[in-house]
Image (cartoon, rainbow, N blue to C red):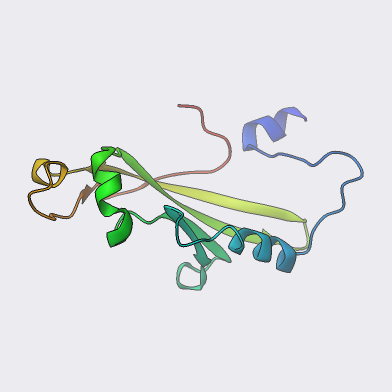
Length: 127
């Protein structure tokens, strides 16, 4: 790993590992979807990217679980598959979440409050 890789969050495969085609990478990422997962990987055409990975925070099945856990941040990852460079590029969108007290107490199903503007970052981020 060189210095620029560290700055950009680039992770290179071990020597001799063949690159997958974008179709193979897409199929592998979509294969992680399952009904019992609290996240979804979906087609990213509406966002002008190849794929989007995000929490199912507004899904009725997971809504109460996230509220009880008092989840403070949610993420959406926009993914582009670059065939010419054999790279997967990603941009993270991060929102802070505030849960109404009544939801945590299970009295009403009030929607969570999201920060109006997401934080966006590329590469590795230490918190």
